[in-house]
Structures are given as structure tokens and as C-alpha cells.
Length: 376
Image (cartoon, rainbow, N blue to C red; front, side):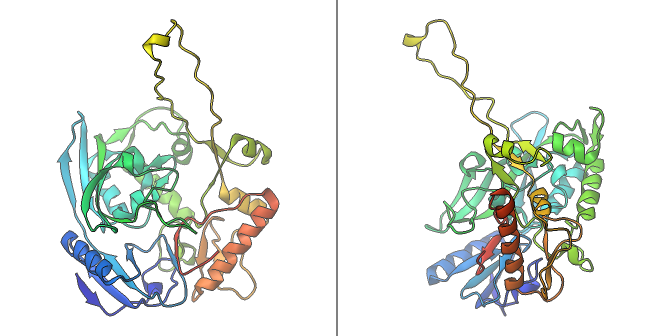
């Protein structure tokens, strides 16, 4: 690690807000990252780690603490215990899309629908990133992390990360602390060795406009996903202000079936799959020869936040008077910095959208990025 002259966070985040922190460290190796974290924790500083800056919304005031830039890189191929599969271990600072590109190029399936998602590998499990029905939890085996409370390094299986819809025990949710404060050093995923695949998921099939079950090349899936994301302003482009944001600013809402039925029928929605592999244990002493029918639990439903926003009267390109922040002209779910917008301007727009959706549909949209020094 080495200490550098602090760089304004507006130059290091895709939404381009935030002043220079009090202190900044660069970590280019796993050992350097561990040293930087332990040294910062020993000082008692406020701190956060910075990867690609694509899921971070920072306030206008100086951050009174230390920012550690995670610049570690590298991908290792490891054997998988499962026939026909392979494992990839990637360092936390490696670009996520670079990992996806590597997998597709080498014929390893399981990440291709998440092409074009910005940010770094280390941030992916924290957010349980996903796109078009594919999530990292489907292939994630384990993470190596360092615990902020003890400074100890451990390898934690994916099953212990509390992975859910855009969440984990490591995520700093708006208004609360993470259940476990730790920093990921590397991740390991288990992928199918195959250069083409049959696409099963409904969302992905719709995005790819597939009509049959014929296998398609991974490279073709990646190309189509990248084109789709570009058309929505979800791929960073220096000259396109529609990409100068944090991607989807609000999460799609997860509601009960009862709440979903109260929404207009044209509101796009997708079932959140229940656990179909639940094991029923019946003590032998009480077994009478019949297995009771499983009790049906109400399934949650994911509804489109973009649809809710537009139907609340917020159109693509909308902005408040005299504001330099606006909704993307390509996607209603993206809030963008049109040039020189302050964090206060972006936050004002976000609060206005939340109030409109709540007034119209009774739902409070939750921000997706990590907020530092900002309140909604």
C-alpha cells in the first residue's frame, strides 16, 4: 500500500459527486490491501473501500476519514470437484466485466448474462449483482475476506453470506449498518465448461428474443446483453451523460402477492422463486404411512421500479427546475449527472421520485447504491 494525495471522489465515481477525502491509500496487492485495512483500523479512522466507484453515491462535503482504493488484479483457474466444470478465483480489484469476458472467451458458462455490469469483483457478492434473471449467487462458491472487527482473514462459503435480492450480510443498506463489516479480498466461482448453452430463464430469453430451446454461443449472449445495456445507457461512455450515474438508482420492489394484486395488471412483475427443495422431516415414531401435502407459502413478487416511476408521471429525461441532475433519457430507473451536478441536486431528484411513487402506489423505492454522506 502507499498513501497518495487525496483525489476528489467526483473524479473516481461514475455519478461524479463527492469531494476529496481526508486521506487516501492505494492497494495494488492482496497483502497491501490487508496492510492498508489493518493500519486504518488501528488508527480508528472512519473508512470505506473504493473499487470502480459505479455503485457509490457520495455527498458534497469532505469525507473525514480514509478511503482505500482496491486496485488488486488477477484471475486463477482452479479445478472443480464437479465433472465438466471449472473454478475461477479473481482478486477483489479485478473489473467484473473483465472477469465475464475472460469466462466467455475461455468457454466457461454462468456469468454471461451479467456482461457489462460495472464495478469490481470484490463488490459483486456484497450487492449479489444480477441481470436478466442471472445472479452471482448461482455460481459463487466462496469469498476470502478480512473481518473489520478482528482483522482476521478467512474463507467464507457463499451459503454464509446471506445472499438475497441485491443484498448480503456485507451490504451497507441505507439507514443501517451491515450485519458483518468485512472486506472481500477475492472470490471463487464455479462455472460450466461449455462454449454454448440452452437459455432457460424467462427474463433472459425475453431480452435475447429467443423463440426455441436451441443452444446459443456464450459470445452471442454477451454481445446481445452488451448491446441491450448500451441502448439503455447502462454502459459507461465518457461522452454520453446518460451513463454518468450509478446504473439503476432504485431497486425493483419486492412485495407480497397481495400487494402485487393491488397494482395495475399492466405493471411488469416476476415471481421470486420459492425454495422447491425444502426437506420435510417426519419422526419415524409418528409416521403413519402418509406424507402431508406441503403448506403453500405466499410467494414474493418483484415489480418493475422503472414502470412505477414512469406511471407516477416521471418521464425519461425529467429534471427539476435549475437542476443539473436528471432521469436518463434512455431509462427511467437511472439518475444521471448532466455535468457539474452536486450530490444535493441528485438527492433532491431522488427524493422527489420516491415521493411521487409513494403517493401514487403506496410503495417506497429503496436506493440501490451505497450512500456516503448523503440522506434521502
